[in-house]
Every structure is written in C-alpha cells, then in structure tokens.
Image (cartoon, rainbow, N blue to C red; front, side, top):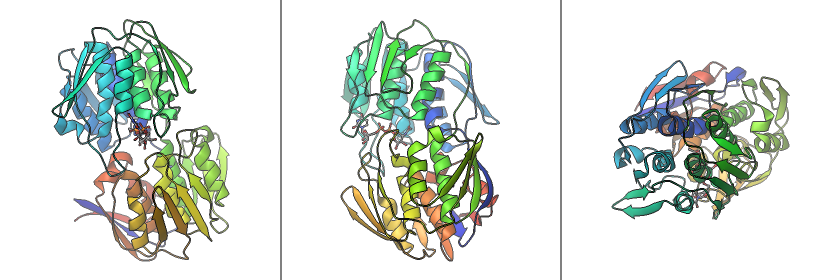
Length: 421
Ligand code: UD1
C-alpha cells in the first residue's frame, strides 16, 4: 500500500487545473454502455480508480471500454449479460447505477447489493422504490438484487428520502425512465450539477427530458437511444478541495476550469470564512489575506453545502480564530477525519451529527489515515499547512477521486512524495 509524505509549511502559488467530474462520469458511462445502441465518446474523463472499477463492471456486462488521453470510448453491451457480481460491486457503491438501465434495456438485472462504507450505512431503498413504481418486480436474495419487468411504464413519483433528495436514486430512475413506456415525473429529484450533466448526455442520446436542473424531472420514454459524444463537466468537489488547499496554506492560487454556478454554497461559505475569491470566465483566484473566520456550516443536497466538502472545510476551520460548528445532515456519521485532524493538533468535538471546531494556532504533522477519499484530501491539505511531516496512509481512497493529486499540488509549490509503506 502507498502513502503520501507531506512536508508542511508550504505556500501554494500558481494554477491548479480541475479535471472532469467523477460523479458525472460514472452514471454517464453506465448510460452509454447499457442504454445506448451505438458507440459513445466521452471527453474530459478523469483518470481515477473509480472510473477503472466501473469500467470493469461494464466490461463484465459485455461493454467494450477504451480509455486514452482523458477520452473514454464505449461500445455498448451486446444484450446478453445482466449480472453485476459482488466482487466488482463491493469495490464501488456507484455500481448500483447499472440496476435501472439493465432492467430498462434487457428487462432484467441481477446486481450485488452494495454494502456499507466508511461514511455510513447508505441504504438504496429509494432506488428500489423508484424502479418498483416504474413497474419492476424487485427481490433481494442471497446478497443480490433481482429486478425484472417486460417493459417499464412511466408514472409520477416522489423520491424524497429521510435526508432529502438522493443523487443515486435520481440518476438510476431517470436512466431507467428514458426507455419506459409513457411519461415519468420525478418529484424531489436531486439537482446536483452532475445530475444535470447526466440528463444533458441522455438528451444527446435521444432521450426526452424536461426540467433539467430543477427538482421536478419529466421524462417522456422513447424506444431507443443512440451513442453520442459528450464533454463531461468539471469536478466541483475537486475544485472546492483545491480552493481550500490554497486558503489553508495562505497561498495565491488560480483554480482553473470551474464556474461559480457549480459551487454556490462552497463559495459563499469560504468567503464568509475570509477567503477571497476573484472569479473570471475560466476559473477563480484564491487568496486569504486575513485570519480565517469561524463559521457555521450545514451540509445539504445541492444547492446547499455538499457533504463531499465537509471534511475539507473542517480542515480549514481548524485554523480559524474562534469556534465553528458543522452539522452533517446528509451522511450523518461522516466524521472519521475529525479524529485524524485531532491527531495533528486540531480541537474538534463530536456530538451525534454535529462537530464543534475550536480554532488552534497551528497544526503539526503526524502519521494519519485516510478513511474515505474526501477525508484523505483534507489530511493532505492539513499536512501542507502543518509544521513538520504528515504521512497519509491508505492513499488508494484519494486515488478513487483525485487525479494526480500530488502532481497538481507539487506543481504549485507543495512538497508531497508517494512512497510504498
Ligand atoms: C452521491 C455521491 C457522493 C455524495 C452523495 C451526496 C456519487 C457516485 N456519489 O452518493 O459522493 O456524498 O451523493 O451528495 O455520485 N439515501 C437513502 N436511500 C436511498 C439513497 C440514499 O436513504 O435509497 C440517503 C443516504 O443515506 C444519504 C442521502 O440519502 O443520507 C443522500 O444520499 P445520495 O444522494 O443517494 O448519495 P449517493 O448517490 O450514494
């Protein structure tokens, strides 16, 4: 296993390019592989282990996937395979995205039931409920979800869950509904930018979708979808992470390839914390001339503050001039990184789904462990701001969602080395 050795006390200066959005690529590659009837070409695809893992799931379903120079070439499945096995699905929960498209296209699916992960239990009841409402018969047996339907039939449904709209259920049901008979209306649909990107891709394939970017999606089913060419949007969370990296090192960085519309809540909260964001048409210049101000943050579905940025902003607030409170309302157990930050000298107290962060004057380097990809990212950022050396182990989590993290950061002045443990 590899770890990252981060030498602290560096100030970032220069341009950090943002890669394509992981959470957009995953469902788009599924749609291209299962729903399409011809070759699709996706541009701006990040080189990530999650993309490779999904590629293996899709190849297992008989799609042909080729990845070269940030471009993914996809020949769809040959309509024989409908099983996504445990060995592949357990590596990445997003494999559940194949469920709806397989039933829509082949009339049946057998997909391993995804397990829990470090950020909480993560149920899939909304995915199943949505597909049942489209007329699928869904059973869970021996760790597998079996779903079948001669042809899905459009209907009206509300996909609100206990913690608000669900990104995954919205994507799964929207993909399935494109080939259903009649019209499907999804109320309380997720509105994340990657859901809109998926919807735009499906439209380019020939799907008929209204309400993109709103919480009501109307999908008029069509008989067939074609392959198409698409450029994936840039990654909002990667951009947010590098903005925090600039701020926590008191640097002067330009994060290139992001728009304010993609990260409204992240921008608002960082500005409230004293980070200066100077936007232009291609990206944002980040400087932090004053002390970091303590703030309160509550995570929520888009356009609220994303749970996927909760760890990173916590890292920044560890160095604020007062006490901040973060309420985690999406993945309520997602706080494993707090204990690791405390190992670096932070002062974070947890109470259920709330973290109270008392700002400290400095962090000091320590051996720490990444528990998920965003937790890993904050430890790298904190390591750059800390005195001394931080060794971040379990880097494979970070590699799931950050393309060439140490290269991008070293190019702007960080001192990070990847070594074998
Ligand atoms: C996606 C993202 C993940 C992000 C999350 C929330 C991908 C591949 N992953 O995950 O990085 O943290 O959105 O922005 O895009 N829920 C249910 N029942 C369900 C589904 C979800 O109760 O059937 C709950 C979840 O436990 C969670 C909340 O709804 O509390 C939101 O989860 P959801 O939006 O579905 O997250 P994912 O799609 O799994």
